[in-house]
Image (cartoon, rainbow, N blue to C red):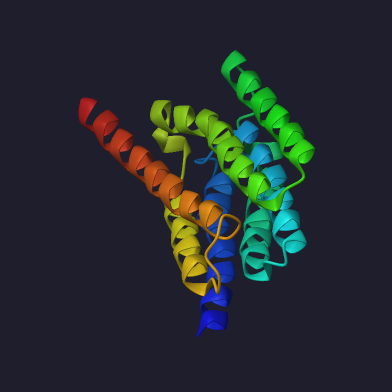
Length: 192
């Protein structure tokens, strides 16, 4: 059963990119590349940390997430939001500093906790973009990615500081992202 949940988690996570990619190609979704590049780096490093801790279930989930976000970066390079504001630069620098600190500790558990914190910092530019221009985001991608993380939690065979934090964070942050996009789109539509 856990194998089925793991496969579902990976497939759902990768499939989460489909609505976003469709929106990018239509010109309605404009990813903030500061966040997406940060997420690509972090999920890649989280995958390596999970492999080094022999937590292969987590590695499959984070590997699927890496594929998802990297694909969005590739599409976003041509059609995304690439203007760096001072806020974006601060978030990107904070994420890079966090990655450096993570490597200094050389611990998978510290690495995963750092990834969650850095990921949250990397999410802030997209949160701001979602609040200001919700019509340029695709809430379905965040909802699907959160669902993938729920299945990943169900697939875990051990529960510890390496396996739990990232998947729980992904569920929470994707619920937040979907909620912000839906709420702000309704508020702005009602104001027109």
